[in-house]
Length: 381
Length: 256
Image 1: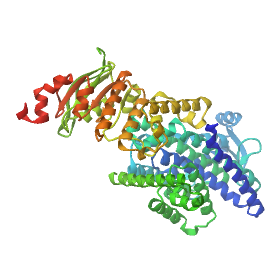
Image 2: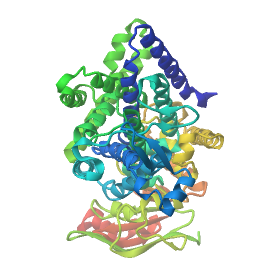
Image 3: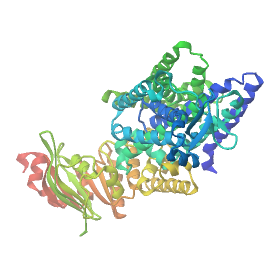
Image 4: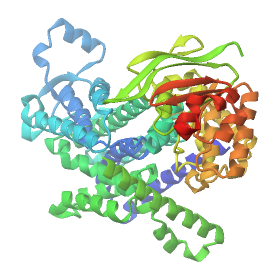
């Protein structure tokens, strides 16, 4: 079936993920799995941002804000101790519904807090509502006006989590309980749960990929690409461009919040560094280096670059590396590393049939046009 | 031809001190080909934009099938059955020709975000129908061999035909064509006039802004002449050709 062809790479990715597990086990580097798992959660953010930037053509420099909204919401709700209200009738009724749970933290204290499921759904709801509220006015903006407005949003979120007592200020929030999914499956960063969490994170990523791939190949995906390429024409063909851009903005914010919520449970903590502007810039850089309108490229780059960053490969130049990546991509490969026709030519030169050459020429011509269009768009503001 | 499909009543729009369209009232009968002519800057494209919703009028009304659609957003106007092409062809350059026309099916299909993400059986059935329908439209205009080409790689004339196909894919009742013959050679213009007649014969009413007088005079049933935003004449082509006011603005006073 033709429609199923887009799922073959998902299958291939699943096999590679299992192979990576085996390789890590054989080479005795099983502890790398922790960083791979964390990187996978970050990849959720860039998958959403890729839909927004690469397909709908709208930039956001505030996605670390949505990640932080997801992470901090679950952190506050699952750690804020409500023991004081234990006897209150609302607390009892919430408890009987399973919305409040009693547990014991690392310091052997009894904590009565919201269950991770409730916290997770609340995080999604909050991120969604804020995305709509922010999106309604700002999504009307174009180009760098939109970039600046979303940047402002990111800054506000950063200052709030850094300043408010509720969010632990500079210390952030720690000691989150594990997130029990089904049966014995739980999002839990402790060593005995390493392997299962590696797979939980990847299932989340592949699920997001399947949803994203379906979307871009659908009526809505075509509409988004058309908005990106000629908003006026899209509008004249019955596409409610404003609504589509807003919906994509909210969808990408939700994915960022999911990544934030799950990673916070996995790490057991979250701090204000997750909400910085540099994190937002990092997400944008990853989407750019992944090829903008390229979900697979973005996902792979998201996992790879975050993994290297978490392993400390970039040392104290971490943020500088992502800045440099962004500059480099814009200058030399505006359509992403995995798409540069020249790279293709180098790797596939052996079997360059005339058809491949034709394809190459076409791709190059399109690349030139695209660059010109980008330049023109920039100069017109 | 008695039915009025589209009507404008005292439509007015100025930009700064320039009156682009001044109190223009006209009627487009169902099934007709109506042309809007006039010198550069006469307000023809602004008139189109006012009808299509790209620009909002300061006064006056647009009625479609007797319904007031003044200042409706372009997507709402399009969903109602008014399609348009642009003076400078606006294809989606990086999409294939086939995809371009598939986007034109938007107002006739339904799958939303959730359906798209889940790709349920009825969603992809709809999408397959969209593919087939788009291909059918391309074949009808003799463009099927270009279906898989990237739109920006086509020649200028072909791009314009694809834009036609894309507009037709919305199954419009009214087609607004903004200078369809601009930049086409005489053979292409001839093909174009055949095509417009064919579209009309299938029941699509056409409103055309055009500079090519031979095209206008041979295919249109009625002509409206604008000058400096005002309607100065309206009638069948033969009458317009003899109208002294029209001759004056086109050829100068001494010819009138």
